[in-house]
Every structure is written in structure tokens, then in C-alpha cells.
Amino acid sequence: MKKIRRIFGKDIGAALFFLMPALILFTVFTAIPVVAAFFISFTHWDLFRPPTWVGLDNYTRLLHDPIFGKVMKNTAIFVLATVPLQMGLGLLAALALNRGIRGQTFFRVAYFLPAVTSTIAAALVWSWLFNSNYGLINAGLSMIGVDNVPKWLASTKWAMPAVIIVSVWQNVGYAMVLFLAGLQNIRADLYDAAALDNASGWSRLWHITLPMLSPTTFFVLVISIIGSFQVFELVFIMTEAGPANATNTLVYYIYQNGFQFYQMGYASAAAMILFAIVLLITMVQYTTQNRWVHYDT
Image 1 (cartoon, rainbow, N blue to C red):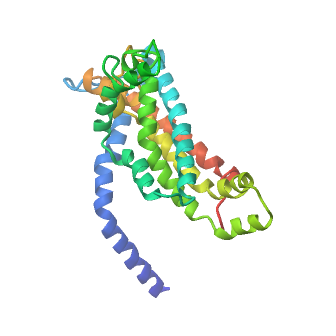
Image 2 (cartoon, one colour; image 1 turned 180 degrees about the horizontal axis):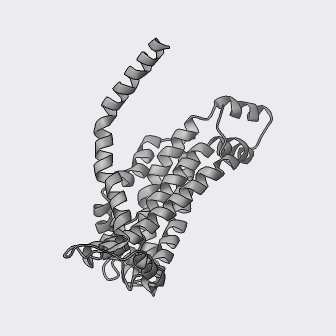
Image 3 (cartoon, rainbow, N blue to C red; image 1 turned 135 degrees about the vertical axis):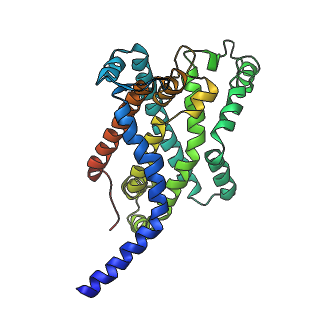
């Protein structure tokens, strides 16, 4: 027993030694700010005067703020639109590339390239493309006979769809790579057995591919939802939450109140609500995964 304790003690010490830099960075730049934001959310603090305790006033203001209600609706629309699209398109691309088509290396790079492209640069380029006066998108629509071309980023109706399009374009490649890795880990003998039974392609997809791919699907779903709730750069560069708050989302609203209006307590309260929403959704996903996630044992 003493020998075992000595071995495990050395392992724990070595693990802590190598983890210490990451733990220090996490504590300083993540854990402490989160705890501080929680307490700041119960105060009124404009950065110019000492914070004063106001209890739940900031949360009450949020519940009665019509702009916050619009922000929550915009965020929900963005998440509900981007997550299924980027997952569905990513899965289709992965299924196509997993069949060994010609030039698959080129297509893999082409699909994944937007995922590693700077979001700021991508947003700037797409802002020019969506420009209602000289953008290439409207020029193309005019060439095919569309008379009333959308004003895109200047329209309360089309600004959010434009941001969603760019977000999906940028994230499909990342989902594709993850799905492709999951597809290549599915045992070949399962497909061989299905071929002996003369199973159709649709049957193999439904009864083998999708169930065996469910752990990857679960992972992509979790990170896609979390990432969609945190959208900021696209909104900041393309629309600045306009027009008329049509593209204002939770993270931009937090930035707006904290660093433009200097209402740090109010911004922290909104951040805590965002944290609670993401935590709740993630917990529900982990709780219900046993019903549809199948691990190959």
C-alpha cells in the first residue's frame, strides 16, 4: 500500500507540475473574472465611482427592458438558425468526402478554410459583398432578373439572415472535419454485414452511420450551441447591432452596456443570464444524451 501511495503521489505531483501554468492562467483570466462578475451584477458601477450594492435591481431592469427582450429573441433566432444549418451542411459535406471522391483533399481544404480565417477579415469581406449599392451579391441578383434586391445590412428584415449566412459559411468546415473524423472511426465490419443483408444505402445511413456517429453529433451540437450564443465579431463588424437592434445579440448587448454605456453591474447581470442559459442547455444535453447517443463498445 505504501508503494502504491508513493507511485500515485509522484504521478499527482507530476500532473500538477505540468498543469500548473494552465491552471494559473485559467484562474486569473477565467475563474476570478466570472466570480467577480457575479458579485458585480448585484451592484451599480459606472467605473468612475465606487460600486454600490443594489441587490436584484439589475436583474429586475433586464426583465422589464424591451431592448433586452428583443436581444433574447434575436439570439434565439440566431442559434436556432445557425446550429441546424451548420451541422446539417457539415454532415452532408463529410458524407460526400468520406466516399473517396476525386479531389477530396482540395474540397477538404476549401470547406475548412473559412473556419481558420480571421472572423474580422471575413466579416469585412462579406460586408462589401452584402453592400446594397455596389455589392456583388445584389449585382448577381440583378443579373438574374431580381428587381427588388434586398438592402441586406441596412434592412431590419434582411440584416439577421445576412449575419446567419456568414456564420454558417464560416463554421460548416469545422463541423465537417469533426463529422469526417467520426465517420472514419466507424467499424467497416458493420457495413460489410449490412452489405451481406442487401441493406440499401438509406438503411445503412439510418441504422449504422447515424447511430455510430451520435457521439460526434453530440459533441458538435454542444460546441455549436455554445459558440452560437457567443456570437460577437460578426455583429460588431457587419452591423454594430443595427439597424434598430435587429441584429443585437446577448454578447454584443453585454459589450454595449459595459464598455459603451459603462453600466458594469447591468452588463454583468446580462452576462450571468447568458451563463445560466448556456449552462442549463448544456446540462439538459448531457442529461438526455443516454437516450440517443450510442457508444461503440
